[in-house]
Each structure stands twice: as structure tokens, then as C-alpha cells.
Figure 1 (cartoon, rainbow, N blue to C red):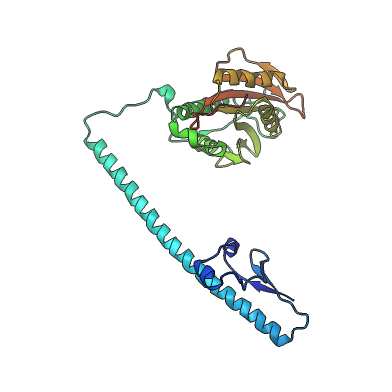
Figure 2: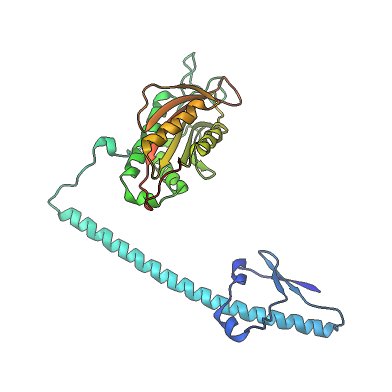
Length: 328
């Protein structure tokens, strides 16, 4: 016979072994008939052949009694852990507050002026976020998402790409960036972009989709697409291009491919990335004004050959904490 026993709490705790269980239960585990059935119930399997109802009832109550004891032991350990964790976090926060207050006091009394980074190395975060807007239609009216030719204003696109470049340059100079993965770096870029721009119809226009995508939306359409990828070879980079093209919704979409290079030769990697773009089936043209860490391309949509995508290729050198090399 199988009995269903409801419970509340974290089902992962059923897989733990409290200290008391090892001491009291020993090798002969009386909870052998118990199986975790889901997030809200256990299943108790008991033999019924040749057993009387009274025997089955006693077996069931005995198992439930052992379960109740295990829950008590587990809760005691969990409560103790949570209490220690709260105390530890509290002490860490107090320490951080002390450091901040000491720094502020030193800054207030110091006779040495603070060094201000050159404008080209700063990541600007304006007091008021800039409004995203599309280019005007040929008749001078503002474009909408339903317009035949909704095109993101070129100066806004250039400003977004410049903001990303400044952000990534700052990361190149930060040793701790070596410890970050794709999603963590993407989130840092999102933080700066969210501080700089606001959409015409939504409050937060930059949102992460999946693991690595950056989307700027205007009136429920994708106006800007960013893909953050660590360099893992030309094949993987080609797949990143296809992934980016799959998000295109506007007739003329602006996009950026941000390639993080950890180890290897950055110049060689950027040339390989540019070569992949040039030989891609959607390649249309390339700007002659590219640099060692920047390239500007125009691709055609796979779904509509009349739909063009302006793509900025941005290379970022990430310090390699392990001393490894990039993929070939």
C-alpha cells in the first residue's frame, strides 16, 4: 500500500542527513519505505500482503513518527545555521559601514585633490536618461513601430555604441573583471545602459533576454540588439551572428556584437571575427573606418532581404586570471 503524506518546506532537505539521524537510526534506516513524491508530498510504501489492518496502521504511524523526528532534527540545524548567517552578515555590513565612514572622513580632511579620469575614459551616467527615438519619416513626421520604415536615429545608435565602448574600456583596466562570466558582464552593461536611456513607451527599455542578449525596445519592437560573447572560435562566433539575426524585427535594426577576449592575441582574434562577418551569408558591406578593436558592418535579414542591420563589432580584452589562452 502507498500512502501520500503532505508536507511544507524545501524538498531538498529530505536528501540531507541530520546529525541525530546518523546517531540514532544507524545502518538500519527506518525511513526506507519513504520516497519524496514532489514539492509538497511524500510517498510511504508499505507491504500489505498477509498483513492485518492493525499491523499496516502501526507500521504507518511508526514511519510517520520517525519522519517527525527527522524533521525536528533538520529544523534545529537549519534554525541554527540561519541564526549564525544573520550574525555573520550583520558583522560584515557593520565592517563595510566603518570602512565607508573612514573613507569619507579621510576624503573630507585630505589636502590632496582627487584625480579625475580623462573624459574619454569615463562612463557617463546622466542625471536624466536620454529618450530613445526613431528617425523621422520622409514627410517629416515621427516614425512609429507601425511605420513602413522605422529606423533608429543614427545619433542615438552612435551614442549607445560609444557608451558600451567606454564601459568595456573601463572593464579592461579592472583586474577583477577576470573573475566575471558572460552573464555578470552583461548585467554590468545593462546597468549603465539603463542609467542612460529610457524608451518612449516603457520605463526600462534595456532588458536581458536569455543569457547574453541586450534589447532596447521602442513601442514593443526591438530597436537595438546586443550580443555579449566570449571568443570561443569562429564557429561559435558565427552562431552568435545567427542568434542576433533571429531577433531582428525592425526594417533597419541597430545592433552590436561585443566580443570578450580572454588570452590569445586580440588583434588576431578581431581579424578572425571580422572575417566571419565578411563571409557570412547575410553580409552586405563593411565600413572602411574600422579600428583594431572596432568594426562596423551592414547585414541583411535572413527573413527579408530588404531589411538591413547595422552591426558594430566591439572587441574587449578581459584579463585572464588563469593565464590561459583564447580559442583559436
